[in-house]
Amino acid sequence: MDSPSILTAAAGFVSLDAAYSVLAIVLVLGGLIFFHELGHFLAAKAFRVGVKTFSLGFGPRLFGFRKGTTEYQVAVFPLGGFVSMVGEADASDIPEPFTEKDSFALRAPWQRLLIIIAGPLFNLALAWFLYWGIFYAHGQEYLIPEVGTVTENSPAMRAGIEPKDLITEINGSPIERWDELVAAVMDSKGGEMVLTVRRNGALLHMAATPAPFERKTLFGETKTSWAIGLAPSYAKGAVRFGFFESAAQGVHHAVMITKLIGESLVKMFERVVPLDSMGGPIRIAKEIHQQAQSGSLTGIMLLAAFISLNLGLLNLLPIPVLDGGHIVFLLFEMVRRKPASERFQEYSIRVGVALLLGLMVFVTYNDISKWIQGEL
Image (cartoon, rainbow, N blue to C red; front, side, top):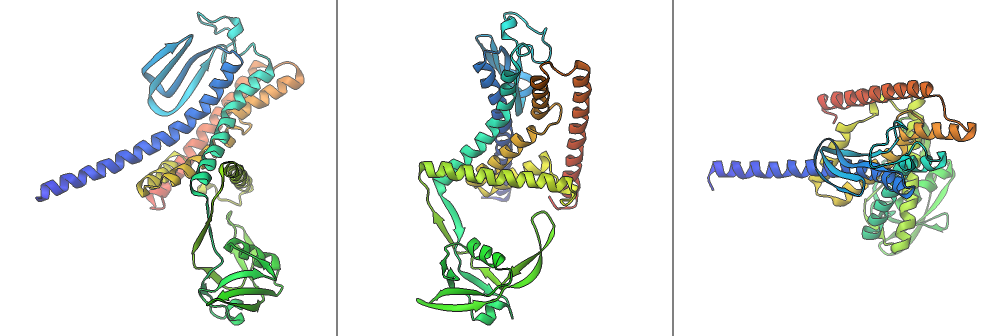
């Protein structure tokens, strides 16, 4: 093959890689937002609210079809979608062939509340479903408590622990995972520990006293911790789950990630986590691109589940324009037995729009800055 042919083939592979990454980004981001809108759509249909348009994507219409009174369409920009309900923005907006009985605005507050909350709940449910599938297909990998390296002059070295030792018990309690060893050392608070290790088929008992050290938490806080000077060999074990066990593990993992996201938001407001750590669409696209290039479908699914949780939780924030803001207005209406004034809602929505636009500009600026600096 001559040089021009080699260059042409190489360019073709680059184009295929780029196309695959773009497709992954569109499917993940567009799919998650579409699934959010699907929640609103199905809830609206359940309460017999008229839906004028259900759109996959936004912007100018590419193609579509009409079924009953609803127009189903695909639009130019695939990253998202929308559901246009009768009387959603204006109670008097009731086009033919709809009637007042189809109006969203004339539904009871609790019905409107369920329609609005269905979007974020669908995102949370999707994350759980993805985790369920991953646990069922692959199980859960973990690091076994096998020693990789021992720090010089550390408590572990003084105790006689060596690389390739397999730690089987701590203070008489059996362990199977490296994180169990870490947790036991942390909980010791510097008290002496008796470790049982397996070496060349023989069991040995060794005493080590953890030493204090300063460490950075996930959120950048400095805390005193304990260590004995061991690093794992990174040998892995795996546990397989049945169909329903995988569902339970999916719930557990989704709750764990949800708590982590919530704690991150709190730490950000407390200024523990720097604001420049916030990322936007460019960073998300970069992460999806990296997973696509690695060829890891599981990695893409894990990332999609994480983004779906973020999308669902952020939409529940009590900010006007977001679903959470509408939920606050509806709860206020249910308690007060009449809605907030139109003028108050209008000004609140303006503030909400300004906040969201400001946030989008800020996170995009962060992404571009880190990209220029080579950190993205």
